[in-house]
Length: 328
Image (tube, rainbow, N blue to C red; front, side):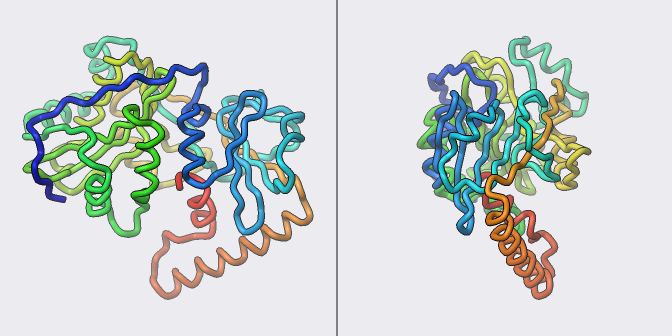
């Protein structure tokens, strides 16, 4: 996407960020407000945010990176059919919850300790990552912040194959509205054209590598390496203690689409963290199971239709359902 009227190289704007005693982005007030704007009902039980949304008459609950007790489960609103829990550790799994084959949040991630010096962070990177950063710094790339959400999203769509999911403009606008200056829409620009982008969210002294995209020229110029390095330096300046890469390939829940991007993330070093996964529980078993069975059958038939008449193997029952509930 071509840009007009861009200023010369612009420093990333840094904002005051809310310090909360939480352990994950999903348990911050900013994220809770964001999901409200996305159409979710948000409740808070025993200090933990829970997110509720109806899917074809079934109320589905997500509890992410927060402990939940049987007493709290009993306090859920009437009509809840299925509860999905993604705990920090196995001790936070109440009786009756069963491990699912897929997850909403990444079950494995990578963290970089930002309390270290820039030199130390560079030293722990792989040689290829350090080389890529140096190359990108000399390739004429400028890094910009908040160029404009509409133009940013258009560049993202143009850089991404049509079969790949891209957040809606409204979703990105809601992120910006709720996180404000703590949502960094970083763009790598060459000759007034966005060639790569990275969305960083700041909450509770942590930086989250939330979204990213790279076009063909961006891959050639190694632009995403430069964007990550700029995010690391600026997050350090405002006192962030960690950068969370928001997901790695996990052999326990294999998704082949994660392999290439995970290799990129791991080149920055850091420590890998594993979570137990996603656990589910049917609350209203007979009625809920009957509805969910009919819903699953509908999605299977829809997926078969698309595969039969378009040859698109990406659309599956699982991805249709999960895509509705993850980052929408």
